[in-house]
Image 1: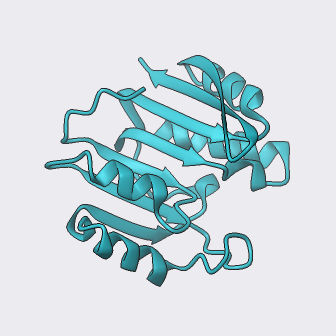
Image 2: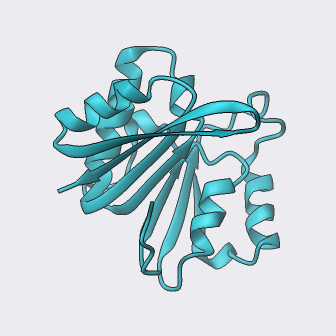
Length: 159
C-alpha cells in the first residue's frame, strides 16, 4: 500500500507498544518514524512510553524513532509535516463522532501534499473516509482479516 523511498517522515497514531512505528522505521534510511499515544496502560496491557522505547532499541531502530505523549485530536505538529500517517485499532476508542471527526481533520492537516494515510480499525472507517473526502483527500476502502476478526482499512491520499 506504500511505495517506500526511505526518506519519509511517518506518524503512527496510537502507537501503543510500537508495531507500526517500528515497522515503518525499518523501511527508512533517512526518514523518521514518530509515534504518538495518550498512554493508557489498562487499554493495551502495560502500554507505556518506556516499553515502547525499549522495543525500538531491541529492534535496532532507536535512532529512527521518536515518541510523544499527544492526543490525535489536538496535535502540536505543523501543517503538512508527514508523508505517511498510520493508525491501527486506535481511533474507534474516541467515544464521540465529533471527536473522531476532529481526529481525522487533524490527520489531514498534518499530512503533506501527495502524502498517504492508512487507518485500520474495527469500526467507523466509512466515517473516517467521508471526513477525509470532505478535507479534499482521495479515499479507498479495503477489508482484511487477522486474529480471527474482520478489520476495515481506509487509505486516503492528499493531492
